[in-house]
Length: 298
Ligand SMILES: [Zn+2]
Image 1 (tube, rainbow, N blue to C red):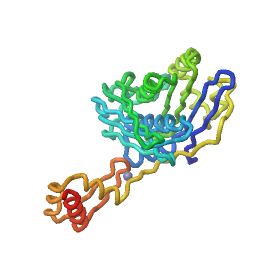
Image 2: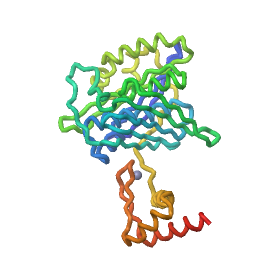
Image 3: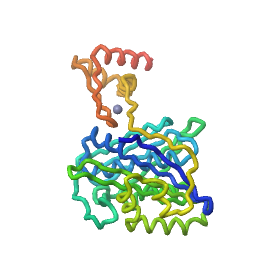
Image 4: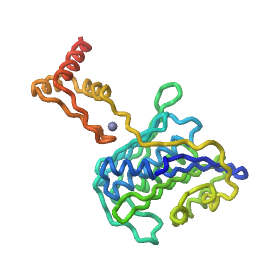
């Protein structure tokens, strides 16, 4: 399957910019690694795709994360992307599997019933090395709609963001596509409102379904004079966990917990939430971490 690429276009007449991503490959990897049920897969795919689109809509991609904490069954969804466009994420409850909507529905599934109320936070790293965090209350509970709200309200960039998913008969993710329309200055808002309405009525979903490759030509149904702006950017699923990272996480536990682990005289296993990999740390290594913690404290 083709690598996922983010593509960019602009409408010279209206100044409207469009970023889109066929995220099928990376979202499928996420589904496989986390053994995601359909509904959990839709939630994570929407958030992974949104994270990539928002990060890449900036001139230069920087480290960014989006976190949803909610009181519905899904519990929490976390995704992050780095400067190399390596994307990863997890959903706290991976097994949710609600029935799909019928063919006439504008979405594969409404996920708000398993999201419920909660908050969405976006954390971006800035050029000076500092971080900037913004948080909003969830409103739509459909993830992409909430990220759209964040962009429009918190960052004052009028936006339309939509992610669509399609499944095979055996519940394997068949396709995942996301599109972000943005308009500055604000007089473009009426144009965006019109696009949003059409997207919400299912027009984008139909377009994706009817085209084997979702490309510029398909998007011209929404913005007729679109022209490509710059080279596409590959985005891939890649976890950044490492043995060194696991050791520094152990160090954060503090000397009391570490002493208990040493007493058990057994290797410790640390699971990566992002990719499910289990890291094993031998007792002798735990002891070394313990000694360095004590040394730091003195
Ligand atoms: Zn990992």
